[in-house]
Length: 445
Ligand code: PFF
Image (tube, rainbow, N blue to C red):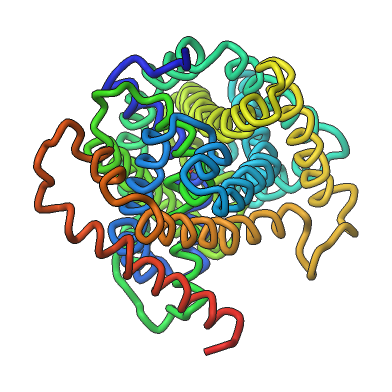
């Protein structure tokens, strides 16, 4: 018997656990900052509604229809499409590789908060910048933290789907939400904070290029954990009576709220402290400590927040790990234990190289980017949109229509008014738009 999640709430929390993570709190603000703030936010929300949600429902339907890992699922439905599953497993492996590095940074900040490191309380922003730089370029510290994070992920995945994954998600998700709200209010009230709110909410379309559209699609897919079969794997563990339409809507809404809240938390603090909103991946690691240092009991706040960030990252690393582990276990017939260890070893190795590419091995560059940045760009901006494109084409045009419908409306239930627009988005809108963006990026149109 295949394992299942405990029920409706369990399914939403575990799936939201995968979706909500560093993508919302670390990646979203820095990508939005690089692409002009408010206009990017609008594009992003449009991508989530018109492409992210339909694609998540598509992936869920493939998972519940087959009850298999991404490769096995595509293979069962149509052998010729197994390649899309392989692309997904490869994307999961590569993303996990660089994601563990950032997750390691959050773990380091958590420990520093616990031991009440005086640097974290400094009100001097250049101190935060310098200490972040020092840490990520340190010869072994970031490697150690990434490795520890990888082992933590391994442990939970080995405990199994229900015991490990579901329990962790159930407690921490609501807490994270509460904390984000409190910090957002505090950040907006900082002197100069309103300027950040304006930057984030007022669209300036002159900042938008086709590159921004690709970045918005990539960020939407990354944030919702779609385009790489993770949601196929997770849906394969849903109970029979879990509604995939409701689960997808709830997860999408939660994930988007967390991203918007993170933006509302980060940008006021960015402007208040005089940091450039285009600072890139270091953005939250410089801004968050500066938010905390302006609060009473700063060590307590920063400890709790970084614990929650670590957990948010953990519920996401678990989902990527699980989708590779499930593939190795079911397709290669490895024991679950051997499959989990192989995934851990491989992704830890990628994490070590990507971490080194920011520090001791800065010479290691691909097309002018560090391995870390190259993996981030390649996966989010190319592999996920490609995976999403093929998945939509598959569910829209090649998957048996009755089988797809049965996943959304089991036991002869009448389709809701939502069904026809959904089919339109999956069959026409998503494939056409993603293809056009690709062709444009490649300079073909
Ligand atoms: N959605 C996660 C986040 O926003 O942090 C990242 C992620 C998890 C991407 C799982 C892909 C994935 F399969």
